[in-house]
Length: 335
Length: 294
Image: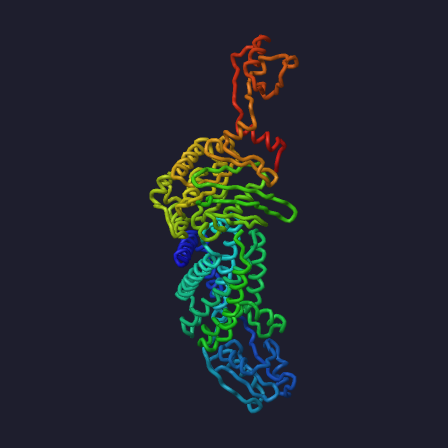
């Protein structure tokens, strides 16, 4: 009986979403447009400036100091050599220089790396030791696509569930359901599963549809990515339930959902890396589910990581889902 | 002895500083249509919501078939709220099927659709239904589980006269099946036509209860005579109370013969004389007063 009631709610909610053409269309079109926009915007050279990461800048040798005094090169301080080398491999940085030990890393496949190396070695070739790395270029587009997919999922999860529940509460639909044998658990489960199915279908559609005409990186397993997105969707839908658990005003719900979604959109590493961000911001970002979905999806798509590599993010998302679900169900009111 | 279908004992509901329901007792037997009447703010909606199980009483006891409200009640009760939103983009047929799937016992949907005159609108989106069609769908939803008891909260509010009469016929059909109906309404003619028993609530208490005819008989032993006001120029010298109304006057009396004789003696034409009995409207105003309630 429980399953029959659950399925009745699930089917009806799915039909409602699919028949709402404008909402469905927007859910699909928006992320496609964003990805296409980025593909177009970053299809050419980003800029003329070279980018060089510097290790041990404070203890730079005289030869290094001379190089560091050059104009039109973007020098930035690096603390983690391992991470910086990966960036050289991905062409995100043209060169990594250990200013104290006079050692440098360039990507043998990078034209910019080749040019900046020539500038470094203008005076005396013997002063710097070369370390060659190789790796395919990771463009900003490759880097940003996992974040856009995750972000689109976040909006669909938060507003698609949170807003809908508040609307039903306000117009009395939930009150009518309360007068039936339906339990809150059955109702909320149907909402979650319905939205998860729809998010996964829409995300798959956007992923493969966009991939047809925009060549972004996907080195990992599709199944692993599916699992990350499924867990991420569950976590963010559950967050939507928490927001919608008692509110009766759509305006209030909209405000609260924006309060959650906007900081997540900007401070979850969707658009820019949080590596150099202030520790406080990094701590806040750690709380956001979007941070973990984006990071895990990016690792799989860009680095070809496996589930074990992203297990920390999966664990956090699972924990958040459980906490949000329990709290949302406990706090839920029909009217 | 078979217990009453629904028994309410000393029901009380307080909101922060308002006593919405103040110790009411009602016993409902199977197969009757029970009307709960009262001005706005009298406590009838709160009472009905507690009976429907969607609001909790502060104190008191409600027994359904001799047992506290619970799963059995939810499965055997049909509820029609005054205003219920239905899901957008879903058809009438799908809405009925969804609600039917919530219950272990389901009515024959084809038969229900026919009885509620929904055949023509089955594939129509809920959003496109007119007021009358929508109310009939909400009634069908209330009947989808073959309920033993049906709560109808102001079911004809906002409907045109034809749609109201049509709805009354549907309710009479349900009554004929022996189902118990709890009806709240602001229309006294509706209560008089449909209800076997009524209770009038005010300030959270039941102030009158019984069959409509018995209540009228107990409260009134007079009738009202109506005459066009052009017929009587001087009202002062007549030895009975006269109320001026718009376009006519009303004389309330328990002795029609005496009044008619006096009117003839005063050469007042009786050509347009109308005599009407007291109605539930009169009783309602008599018991609850005429001041505006908000």
